[in-house]
Length: 297
Image (cartoon, rainbow, N blue to C red; front, side, top):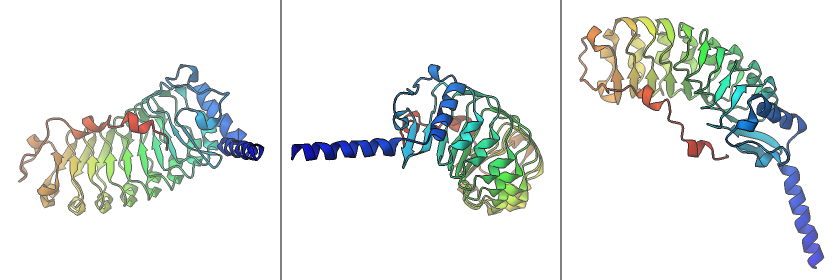
């Protein structure tokens, strides 16, 4: 009887070990990431001799890598193209590290990706147009990098997106009108770039938008009348731009705002002064909770 139980226990443990393993392709993609970002110097390095499911920040389900959470883990180097081979990945958090180089276009192959967090790194180059193919994406945060070029119009295809933060980069050009297609968007941060031109009126369709931060750019023209449709908006920061007129802001309900910052020296509006001394964007750039982010899903 004891032998039967011992055999059953061994079978269960063996089955569990098999389930926790991943394909050679996915394992190699992870090792590429380790090698190209100086893994030996990570705060929590991986041990190649242990099962992938036990590697720090890696979540494995049904034999596939579904999440990588290496928040503030001293990654130093470039992201390998083989990242695109992690086809079952749902969450990728590489924020607050020392990543350099460009964001590989192969990331757009991660069709199941829901969360992409790459803020507070040193990534450069243009944001790939191909990111518009990530139809499952709900959160894209890439603030405080060195991204240049324009905001890809293809981001307007991300109909499930709730958070988009591209603040504190070197982006230029106009805000694409396709942003107005992101009807589930709740937070839009484009603070501190070199954006110019008019704010697209299509942004008035963002009925669920709660936070809109456009401060410290070169935006001009008039504030769109369509802003009066943003009934959910609680945080609006548009200071330090080159607007010709703020007249349309008078059509908005001032009681809806928790934060409302604009250039008061250039506008005489009938709003009570609810300006905060510090911009919310500066406070929320570092809102990632290290303890929460390092919990495997």
